[in-house]
Image (tube, rainbow, N blue to C red; front, side):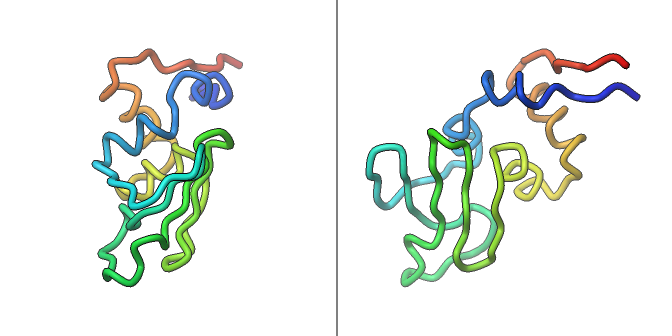
Length: 103
């Protein structure tokens, strides 16, 4: 089974694009740092900045559910799919070729 070139995909699929697919609505932005309700669980109004994402570093963290990672981990968590299959599905949804690594 071929691997996936995640480094190539990180350059091609941004965190911002994944957030758009998840209909993320930030409540506050400071440059590349965005805050808002976590797209992975129901949030109470008092947790309006529990979810933090850094677009330049391609990473997120939720202070409520403790989920963290890159855009592919976020997509996998949101779709409740293993990371490899979630990444393949994300590529298909965005009409993008999967960058396979042949061994």
